[in-house]
Length: 576
Image 1 (cartoon, rainbow, N blue to C red):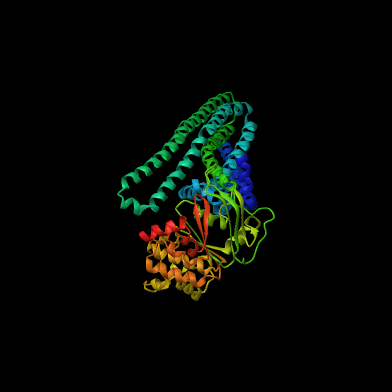
Image 2: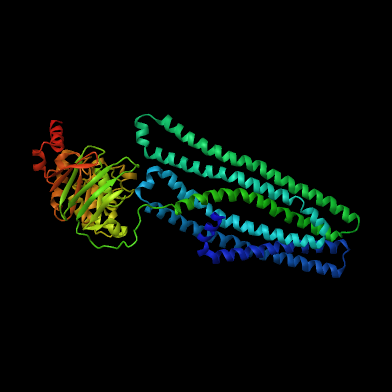
């Protein structure tokens, strides 16, 4: 009921379309209930012997039936179109809600989630709401109204025969309750395994080059097969229950029909039922059991839809660890001062990544973070952009705690070039302008020149209109990284973070990029994370990390003269 109530709350904005659909459903059901009565009356008149007057009445009744069947087209259109319009509008809104919810989650949410699984939530699970509102709900209303109407009518014809007709109903309801309790967990597992199958496919397609390079097609195929078999197994378990349930319901309704025909014949033999009433009862009998059988079939669709709806609601109600804190205020363009005050952080409890880190960066300074892999340098940059919050301590921008700044105004003040460069499927120009969609072409070109990628672009047949392919597959690693740098430079954020921004370029290009960085030095705060110490020589301050702590700080000249970790790192790289 909690799930159903939540689903109803989501649809309240489309209540008028749903009410129109419901009105059409009621009117359609009314037509279906009236038509058999008219047909039974026509049969009664014919059975009594035709006269001119009776023939005229039969013609009028036939005309009334024709009018009812014509108007039934309108009512069916109202019921179908209005419910589908409301349902698909709701699906679109929910799809965007789920997408926006996922898009707003902090980075820790994605640690245990695969892209394909999230895609399945947005596409497959949300689509079940269309089934709920455009098919299940109208059909349930139609079936209940039809059942109630037919029950009243058959009791008015012959109460004793009507009671006999109701004998199978308790057995059908009990079996329906038992079925719904058993089948929904199976459908929930099926939805989950479908998401896992999508995730495996997405993972394999993303890594297709690695699969082919290491001749792992067979093992990759086996992984897809395993996920596919799991999905098929869960689906077949649900279908096995259906295969038992539906024939059982059909048997019970058929048994009820046999009982009714037998008792109806007996009452007709005893002259307690007229021919007209026998015909009416037989016509309404089909209408009586059809909703019951329909409700049984709807249980299957409802269980599958509710399983999908639960997965959607799980996303919508998932807590987000990174949100605007109470009292957070917007800021304009920051000056770029950064400070860490006794900051500690860990991804896994009791496994520290940063421990008691404190330092200050003045606006316009160029600072570098160096150290071995895994000492927390990239994590520190993630804290500056508030992708995570520290476990202890405080990170500040211009002296203001990041928690006191709204996320919407904090992020535009920080521009990142990540170690794992990501380009969107589109043109080079679109990728550079991603952070500033309204940028003029000369701004894009200027940013590309600063990043030393302009000359490469001009050698391409379509220049800035060159398609980069999915994740920039048509470009070299160095080209992708320089485009990412151009993207970061274009938005002119007061804080620029370069995380291994020159890792995929040759020595000559690295020197060019370093020259470009020196050109913009002083105009913004620059945080450089690097393993190549040649890229950090000109930094105002270098922070040396070891085991999540700052063990040294100072300029290159100061640190290279000290007997410490930085000097050892320099000596190792000089030997190599």
